[in-house]
Length: 437
RNA sequence: CGGGGUGUAGCGCAGCCUGGUAGCGCAUCUGCUUUGGGAGCAGAGGGCCGGCGGUUCGAAUCCGUCCACCCCGACCA
Image 1 (cartoon, rainbow, N blue to C red):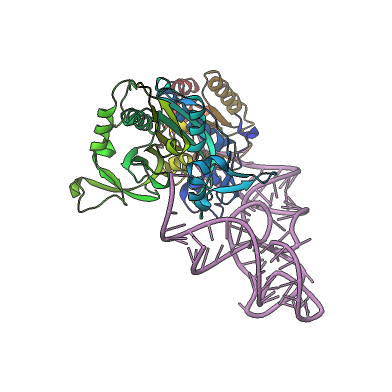
Image 2 (image 1 turned 120 degrees about the vertical axis):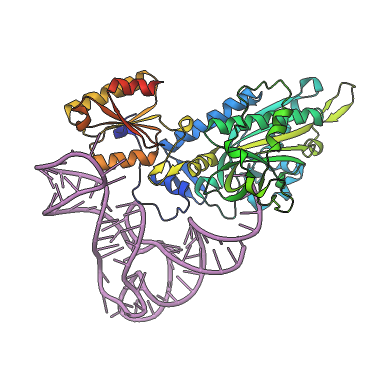
């Protein structure tokens, strides 16, 4: 992509409304724009990141054995009356009426809809386990939206659901998602730690939050120092195998949110305990028959008797992750994207557009990257070097290749690693080879 | 939902107390010079000062009311 033709409205000043670092950087980097409180438009650069994150989540859900569906954003109130949640959910649910004066709502979550889909079609235990997920926009009318996309009212969420014949089978589904989450966040370059959680308004009795560590995180967390160095993610996962040992090993290492942490009963010695901050990016629940019972989701068991299915739901805050990753990975100059979620891998800067040698070298490198399938954003604007370099740091692409008259005179370009700040001069060919790998 | 705060040009702000018809920086447009970390000179365009009502000869400025947005808390993916 050529920056001269790319819609990237970066800002030098921070808009007044933005307080936390990810919100400021997302606005300054031209990733999104607020439409109203807690509701955002995604601009090209931000949308690319959102889609990268979404795709990683999708890959790992597929790998764990779930199938993707897409349920609507607007739901009928009738299903929610069946589950009893229409009256329970409170003002966070956005209630609307259609032209026939029917009660509708913008879905804050999808347990009712997915349960309806399941009960309509599944009659026998032989068709279990049921494993479906979708990635869809949700709306929760938060009293006080804040922190940009980290706590918006409208947000993109992956929610997966499981239907099983009994608790033991449901636990296996839960464990699959548990491991899938470890892998998902690891692939995004994040340190995510599962912590025992309250199950909240959705209800249930087996639940973990996945919290990524970030200095600027919203809540205080405590964990054993081994977490910081531990590689909790199994390299190869056989989802058909018993995953309980993997989950148990993970949970054996202490970690708790400040609500759950009690210094008096904490099993970790003071010297081994790390106190830091985190952001919740995933939450998994087992909630048994909370929905299947009132909504009549039952199947015939092997003995011919009807049993109510055991359910679980598993959420990932996809849009929240965009902000969360920035909170976990930035510096004074701007964003530092982990490569797997970066909007482009390479930022190619032509410092002197119009200079024949610079232009031809930059164009050749650009064509080379494109042909090699490497995502590249080339700054080919007629701008001064200062703003170009500062802008490239701001948007945080993992690699910068700087083509300038000074280097070209010696036959070299500069390759800069955004994260470490290391710069190295090399020939354009060497730069190609370095980044093509 | 309690407490606090802010709305003036695309962005960041001053002006408001002490009413006289709007200004600064950045950005934008034109020209010339400049080109390795947010350039210089010269010129230009852009705002019914959040909305409505009131006071006044006259309101960005004073009064009332509504709206929007932000921060702290309670709440939450």
